[in-house]
Each structure stands twice: as C-alpha cells, then as structure tokens.
Length: 359
Image (cartoon, rainbow, N blue to C red; front, side, top):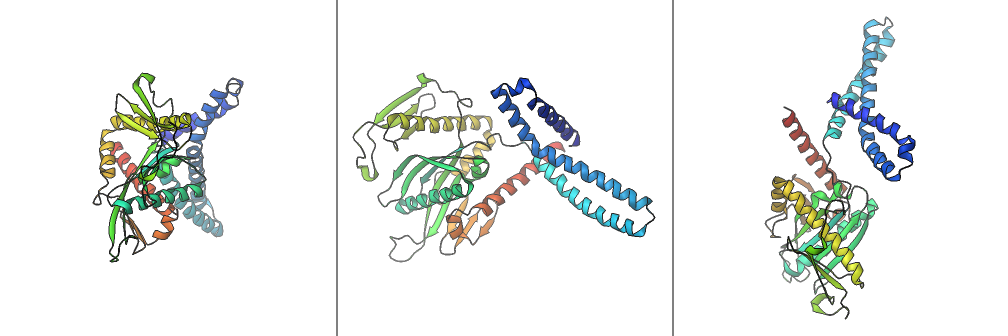
C-alpha cells in the first residue's frame, strides 16, 4: 500500500511542477487536463502526508518516553502517543478507502428515467412524487434538473419522465437509486380505506459525452410528429416532437417537451447517447449488468429495492436493511441519511473485494 502511495505522491509533485511550466500554462487544453489530474490526487496525497506526520510524531513521543528523565514530560508524551496512535489508525483506514479505484462515471451528470409500474393511476401519482423528491434533493445539492420528456396520466400523475441532472458528483450520489421503488398507502380513490401497493421503476444512467460514444448519422432514423398531452389531446399542430431510432440496436427515444424541433432533437440525442453508453458499459461488465437488470426488473410489486410505507411513516432500503421512520422528510428530498448509508455499504463491499484480491 505504501509503495503505491509513494508513487502517487511522486506523480502529484510532478504534476505540481508541470502546472507552473510555461509549456502547460500556455496550452489551455493541456493545462485543464493537468489541473484535473492534480486535483484528483490532492485528497489522497494530503491524507498520506498527514499519515507520515503522525507516524513521525509517534516516533518522537516514544523516544521521549524511553529517554526523558522528567516524569511530567514522560506522562505528557504518553498521552500524546495515545492520541496520535488513535488518529493514525483512522487515517490509515481513510487511506485504504481513498485507494479503492473510483467509478470513472462518478463525476458525470445523469439521465434520470422514472416510469410508473404496477398500480395504475396510483403508480403514476407516486412516480410524480418520486420525481419531486429527487428535485428537492437536487435543490439541496445545487444541481440543475432539466426535463427532457414527460408523459402525464389522466389523474395528473406521470406515466414516464426523463430528465437530466447536472452538477458536481451527481452520478456518485444517484447511482444507487436504480431499481423498483414500492409504495404502500391508501389511494385517494379507495373508498374502503384499504392499503394498496404500487411500484415505479427508476433508472439512473451516466450522461455520455461525444468522446464516450460515437453515433454515426447513417445509423439513425429520425421521425417528427405532433406532440400530444394526457389522454391524447393535441398540444400543438406543428411537427416539433422527435422520435430517434438507433437502427443497429433498435433503441428508440422520443422527445416532445420543447416547441422547437431542433431542441427536441438535441435533448433526444443526449438521452440516446447515454442509453448506448449504458449498453456499452453492460457489455464490459456483464456480471454487474445482470445484477442491475435484476434490480430494475419489470416494475412488479414483488421486485423492490426500497419501500415507502405511508401509514407507518417508514422508508426501508431492502439492499442494506436500513429502516427509517422519516418518510415525510425523505419525500421532501431529505435523502442524505439513505444516500450516506448506501455509499458506506458499497464502499465497504469494495474494500472487502480489494482485500480478497490482494490476499
């Protein structure tokens, strides 16, 4: 571990010098690339330097305890040694976490797709509430949410909504949300007061850039049509809505939220690019893809990653066995306790896997 940390520190020093060189400073593209690489290493280097300072402090304290004749000074050194050793153990664990390879998509924006599953009108109402929940959370993180496509139900819910969330580290926080979200409550239309169960599916895809996935014009079929509202009513009479079909994969994306055909096409391409990127990732990580597909499933009530029980004000994440009686807060976008617990769980899994590989 420490040999690797020494190499990282040497690379960091090399990048620090490069940032001050005229060759890099006069080339904006090269400067940005170097600055990002420097920034990516800064946290782990600072932590490693703290680790080395603590280790030196421990050696000095031990020397004082062994050699000093002054009893009061030895007692102070003993107390300091205990404090330094406790801190050193924590920093060593933090270094192990920082050494775990990061998901290359963590800094990307995401394409969020929410679809009503089993449950009819009640499922569409819950889909709208889930989307509002993520919007509220995005506000707390100062992320930008841009709706790309919506399909409303006759009761004011959402059959489907696709949006892009832009901001710092969006995918790193949102990536564990893919799957079936189940709701248990008494629907507004229920006369007998019985609790019903409905479900929505959530998919979180890292937004792909042009450099991530190349799409050939010859592989696309683009159709235009009049956009429509809930119940099939016409929204406008111009052919502004766009349907893009990627012929090699038969992937279809529709976008009709904008009045401009050009804007709808741009938004549609962002979604298409991300879906194709996701397909490419699945090819490269088949085992992970099988697990993800199992999580998202078909939208049936029995397949779920999380349950929102309104009568009990309870939210349960079934993957990590977390139950919080804070449903009202969660639906209002206060998702940090859930997100932190998920991140800690999967980080521990990565550490465990890394330890097994090393062993």
